[in-house]
Length: 322
Image (cartoon, rainbow, N blue to C red; front, side, top):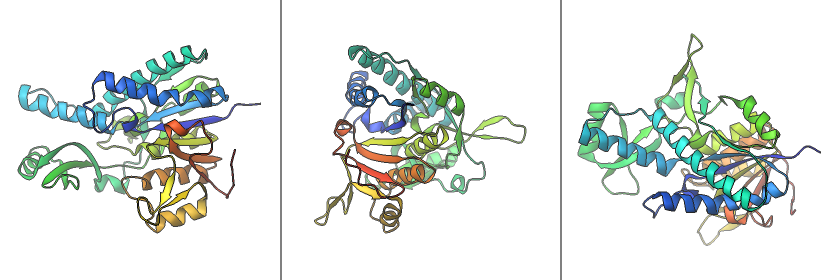
């Protein structure tokens, strides 16, 4: 019988926590803690594709970029190069630590990480409406100066009073480079790390050449796209809560464990899930099952082995208590 293929989306905060400085020791420890939870699926016989976020890391790279320009007059690297940098950085950490974990568990699997380009539509309306916050927080006078000098777009930062942060477009992912190769490698039993940070957004020009686009793709939407493209059976988003909830942290809070497409869409349309938090993850899960995936699961990484945990979304309602 052919093994099930699952796409596992790791959040950037699974590797670098918000209260940490981001030392290599911290990031390695976090990576190991997260990856240990994937051993269960591997032992169950799943073939795996791993994607990951890069929000904290790419923010640090952009800050280093800006500091280097100001202090040393270094040449600034564009956003696509910064995303590629973090793909290599995080992919290396995941691959090295996962190889060590597999060895400790006596599991023979190859692990390969890829710097991945994700194809978007160069006419995507999102490219004209920057919404994705990246980089450091500036005061208004600094933000105005950078906007004039570099043409950057800024929006007021909700979390810091008086702060402003650069926003970039977040185009919709359509396909990704080497998709057929990734599927073949994964189905042969190799663990593939791909489309980190949502992938590097690119488009195909009139001559058929690959061109970069200044933007950041949503990691969960890109991961769902990968799952659909390789015809994965299941899609997992590992986050910091064991379930999704209706009225999260309110007196009327309710755990949502088993959901079908129609009910989940209604919750989404009613504003049950917060934008910038759970709503994008829900959209990714819905997109995956609508395009043919068997099941999407949102759960905490440490709860992955215990099937009592996790919110399961299927196209038709299934009371799946396995």
